[in-house]
Image (cartoon, rainbow, N blue to C red):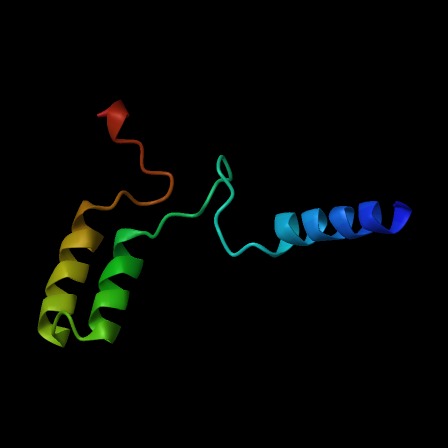
Length: 72
């Protein structure tokens, strides 16, 4: 009977630590808009010209570090 409990605990621990699914409530890093267009370029969803155009738009709209627009 003792052997069966060890097997149950090992299976339970394996299930907890080896499951490939996301754990609910765990914070995951979200892709930035630049990473998204890079991925789309690599996948062939957009052309290099579209990538450059989107990157230019993102560079214009993204705030610079330390830039405080609320003080205008």
